Length: 503
Ligand code: BES
Ligand code: MN
Ligand code: ZN
Image (tube, rainbow, N blue to C red; front, side):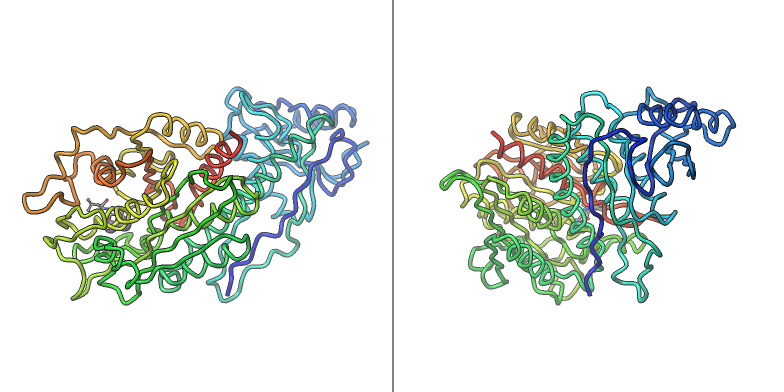
C-alpha cells in the first residue's frame, strides 16, 4: 500500500497571456486592485474588462482572495483566474509561494485539469526566472500533497489538475526557466518522499521499513546501499547507538547510502540523519499529550533518504554518503535506565541521565563512523530538542557549526532554497553543562540553552572534520490540526550539494 504520487505535469511556454490557448489563465492582482503586468496585458486585450470588474468591487487583490472569470472578451483562454497578491511592496518570497499555492488549490477545487500560470513573471527582488520557476513547482507540489495511504477510501478529486504551464513573456528566459523546472521537480519529488516517510505511522515505518525505502531509492538510481544490523553495529563498537533501541522489539538498523557521482578520490560530503521511528522517551517517559507526534522523530533520516532521491534524479556530480542510524526509543525491562553508562564508538563514555535525550546517543556513533570516509564536510540533521522549538519556533532550522565557511555555505543554500536556518552559538562556555562525575560526559546539560548543549555534545564527536548540525525539531513537521510532515530540509540540502557540485 503506497501513497499515491502527485501526477502533475509542468511545462514552460513563452508568449503573451492573452494569447494562451488554455482552459484557464491565472493572473495576479495586487492590493488595492493594482494589476500585475500579465493582468494588464489581459486587461488591454479585453478593452478594460478586468479593470471594470475590479472597480465593481468583486475583488480587491487581498492575499488569498480569488475570482474566476468566464468569457473574457478577446482572450483565447476559456477562463481567467484572478489571484490576490496582497500589497505590492510586501510581495516577497513568502507571498509569492503562497500565491502559487492559492492558485493551484483554486484550480483543483474548480475542476480545471489544465492551466497556464503567469505569476512566475512577477519580479522579486534578488531572484531570477530560474528561482521563480523552481519555487513555483515546489510550492504547487506542496500545496496539492495529500497523504491518504492510511484512509480506507482515498478522496479522489473529480477532475484532478493534471497540467500546469508557466508562461514566460520573453523567449530568452525559457532556458533559465527550464533549469528551474528540472531542479524544482527533483526537489519536489524529494520533499514528497520525505513527507510520505514522516507521515507513515511508526507501527509501519520501523527501522527495517526505512532500510527498505533506502534500498528502493538506491536501486532506482544506482546508489550503493548497506544496512548494518545489531551484530554488525556491535562489532563496530556502537555501544551508544545500540543502547537506545534495546527497549524496543523493532531491531535497529544502521543505513549507509553512497552516491559516487563525483571524481574518483574526491572526498565526499557525508549527511547524517537521526531516525528514531518513535520516541516515547524510554524510561524517562514523555507525557502523553503530543506524544503521537513522535513518529516524526525520524525526519532527519527521512530527509537524507529523500535528498538522495532528488540528487539521483538530478544526476548530481558529487560524492555523497548518507548515514542513518534508525531505532525506536521505548520503555522496557531491557531499555536504557537513567544513570546507565555506555561506551560510544569513539571510546568516550556517556552517563545517560535522561533516556529521552536519545537523539545525540545515536548520532554520536554515526558521526564517529563518518570519519572512515575522510569527509570534506559532514552535515547532520535531527529533530533533536524541544528547546530548539522554544528558541526559534517553526520557521528556521537551527544551525550549529565548527567551521565558519561551512556555516556560511549552508546559510547561503538555505536562503536560496527558501528553507531557512538561523545560526546559533557553539561556544566552549556551554561545554561545562555536560560534566559528569562518573563518565566522560553526561547526555544532558540542564534546561538553559538546551539545543546548544545538545549541539555541544555532538561537537565532541566531530573534531576530525568540518561539521554542521541542523536542529530541525521546529521545522520538520507541523502539529495540531494541520498535522503533517513538511519535507524540510530536503530543499536546503539539495541546494547545498548542487552548489558544491558546480564549483
Ligand atoms: N525528539 C525529541 C525532541 C523533540 C521534542 C522534538 C519535541 C520536537 C518536539 C528528543 O529526543 C528529546 O526528547 N529531547 C529532549 C531532551 C531533554 C531530555 C534534554 C527534550 O527536548 O525535551
Ligand atoms: Mn527524546
Ligand atoms: Zn527524539
